[in-house]
Image (cartoon, rainbow, N blue to C red; front, top):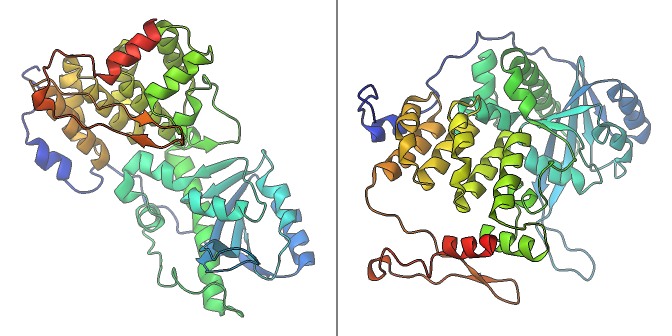
Length: 398
């Protein structure tokens, strides 16, 4: 580590709260649009005619966790969609999803690849929409975008509206009963406002942070990567990295370690979504693919905080001590998530003791996994017999 790296207390730096960087000028607060209550099929069809003409549609959903019991079924706490708010320029449609059981006309909007759906915290809203047959094909999650720029502690809709427009977002009705009918006008206005400000926030992000925003575009198309890698990018792999490689080897998808490295290198070049690239970096660290260190080092200067933090974590886990100086620079990153990741990585890289790799899980016939926890102090440091990475090498090098 060279003399020009500040010897600042890493604990203090990592724990410095919030975003420490600059912010663009405050924008003009979004104006109220024409709000239309939709509770009849003919109204929904008219709304869809307008929505289909837009290239951007901001959506917010209001739902409740209602305990229901279907015939011959046990009770469940399935979310119940109550309202669906769809905002375009100058109009916001508040759809009564309780009275309107058939929402299929909206498929022409949410499943149209030419229309970008804007959400803030897409997961829950998209799941409850999918339960009603509305599968979103092309969308932007503005919460994930904001997190890439300002960090997870600064990415809520309330925090972003304060930053972008100096606008206080009233969340007093957030946990109200959205199934009550009739809804008071104040509740309808409250619901509509979330969709309206989501649309305004998109335009603010597009104006000041377009390159990062564009990285967060999502479609229903799979990433152009090896099939064994894809589940890890979406965080839904049922296998450990070691088991996934072993299975891919059995299926003839991986011939040797060279192909394993090549698959991951190709994925590094082709995967652009920050969160999926972060998961890819974690996979690379899990597999101890030090051959990809040059590509990982470049991401220490990435535009998104997701990639900067993930690359720091990967280099720390791979124990690349030559990267200590570059990782240390991230202790001064404007985003707290990155500072914390750099702090952990610096500690790992400064640790002179050999760190013991994690034990690989054993998968039973029923699909369950178990671990054998060994006392590292009772094992010679040079023993590789129980090292899961050694077993991985034997799989890929055979």
